[in-house]
Image (tube, rainbow, N blue to C red; front, side):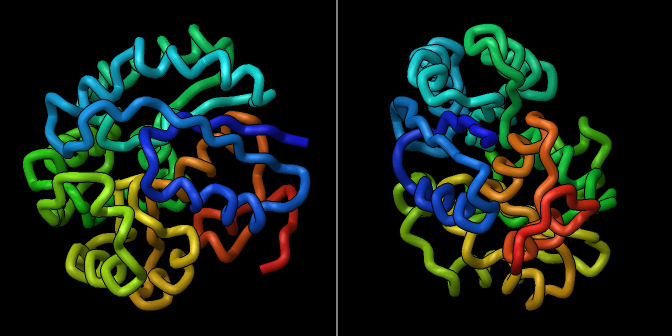
Length: 245
């Protein structure tokens, strides 16, 4: 049994995780622990408070009780707003307080893009453009070229959590670019676990979504590779464990 822990802010699309757990097989357990979201706002000041060390540390005891072998801060905007160095410090603080290997969704995107060989990407974000630009800067610091970026101006995670497949598809299409090797949808409040394969079929290229890469990153930290084609191209590379599609 491999147990993986996720610190997830508030309640929006956390039901993506049990869906992904079903797709990954019976020996992988995904434990979602909710952190205090504070003010639900895609604003830099609110996001900095959401990802503050004391907020994440407050959930560490529950994380330990879950038996997790690794932990990922399942929040993209609440990590990239700290910048490249600040996001590293955030993860180091989390690893120290939890006593576990740790990462965040922002680093998950950088690692996943490299995993699939996507050196040029397009960003299709739910956030306002000023917040999305922080993600672009983060990716560039990771050595990834962003050829296009589209923001949607959505302020709250609660609103994003109500989006259905038609909304997600429209966002991905609008954010795509002919030169992009992959399209990135960076919001863990967005329901995408059921849609990755359909999005990739429609766009004709890999799609990386926040909750998808977050789970992949936790598996990477735990030294696991799982073949789960329903979760997209990212989950079909050099598998150790075969899972039927």
